[in-house]
Structures are given as structure tokens and as C-alpha cells.
Length: 113
Image 1 (spheres, rainbow, N blue to C red):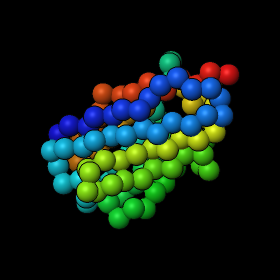
Image 2 (cartoon, rainbow, N blue to C red):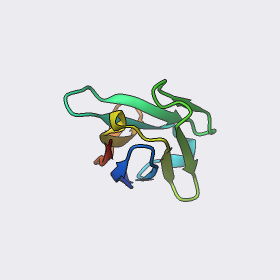
Image 3 (cartoon, one colour):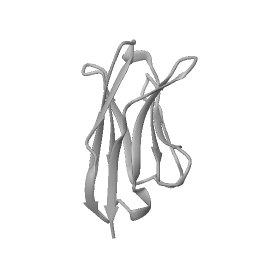
Image 4 (cartoon, one colour):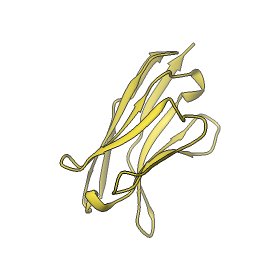
């Protein structure tokens, strides 16, 4: 299993970023995928998830600002992040779970005020 995240960077508050996670090694199209984040000194938290059928869920802190989506033809899951806030600064990880968690390498998002 490989999860390759990309798209992080430095952005000003109010800006946007789109994260991508390319997956391989499992049947992506039927798999639920998640985005987590971990800010310095804090626990890793679930940001958003999407089922194989496209049903989504979001943490309250990102509802209305972030959108998770997937392209099964490309085995890729995305996280569109709009109206970014300094509190969104974190390393973002894509995740797949089947009996255990599989993690990508993480991509750093830094939001300046």
C-alpha cells in the first residue's frame, strides 16, 4: 500500500490550497478514504472522509470551507481547502483503514495571518 500526498505549502489566511493523495496497492474505488491533520503539539485529528460511494463527512471546524472528493479513475483523493485560517496549519495525512491504519507521508500546510 502506498499513499502519496502532495499539494501543501505556505498560504495567507483566506487563501486556498488543494491537496492530492495518490493511492496504490489496494482496490481504491470501493475504499473509504480520509484526511487527517496534526498540528504542532496536538493529537492527529480527522478532517474529512469519503466513502467509496462518495458520501462525505467533515470535522465541524472545517465544514463549509473544505471539500473532500475522489477520482477513482486516477486512484486519487483530494482535499480542497478554502478560507484557510492560521489554525489550519498542520501536517495533513491521507489515510486508508483496513484492519489497521495506512498513512501517507504527510504534506505541510502553513497558513500565515
